[in-house]
Length: 303
Image 1 (cartoon, helix red, strand yellow):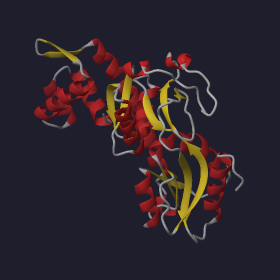
Image 2 (cartoon, rainbow, N blue to C red; image 1 turned 60 degrees about the vertical axis):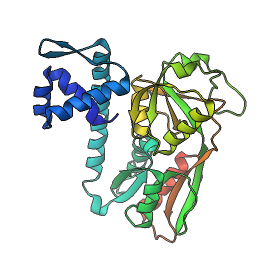
Image 3 (cartoon, rainbow, N blue to C red; image 1 turned 90 degrees about the vertical axis):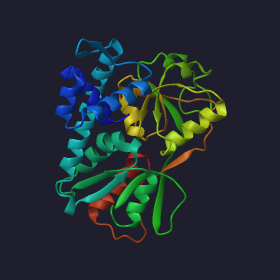
Image 4 (tube, helix red, strand yellow; image 1 turned 180 degrees about the horizontal axis):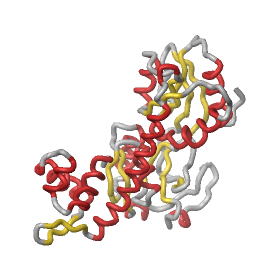
């Protein structure tokens, strides 16, 4: 499920009819009706009652709209922050990062970087690890943070930290009280499979996290109670933060308020490396060097 889906449902709720909502959204009524049916099919429940000619939210629909509006606000804030930073892109350091790194970049890295006066502006690009490395090879970005795939010739890799697949849960989830510390695990371990009955945020399998979760459920022979489908880790963590469900993700480098990590004993995918990647032999300017040093220091490494 994406931001467009949220806006469609919110507009239908606001207008009370498909015709009026479609006019406001500048799409056809039939296209909006198909989208509504698809979203309700994905959720497994209707979002609206029909009362005469008017559409009225069901109780679940009201919860959906309340949280959808929060998610849209968060997404808009992030887009605005990115746009503001890209105003001087021609003279900017071009930083790429994976979908799970947004909190780290905006809450930790950039405030530390911009605390030093006279550093260059930053333009940011968010994407999958493979596409970021291709951008680096093609000189579309200067440095990137990615989960370490097989190394490509011509690129320099600085290993920052190992990470593993974890279950992200809302910070007030009752599952936190059920999890127990266990030696060899960085977070409390959730025993049993009762968590599968809780709402689950499904990340599409084109992502590393989504593909790993799919393999895990296939090996387990059991499937979670899928509530939402999202395109990336950022969308999943937004949904978890708003208490819409749990999600399996490759552990991002910074935990934002609103969610916690738990380990699943059967989730045995190989640990991944979080890497900082640059082009070999690149003559870095002082601002780029400082950005790289800041990244390393935040991960506990000497530059």
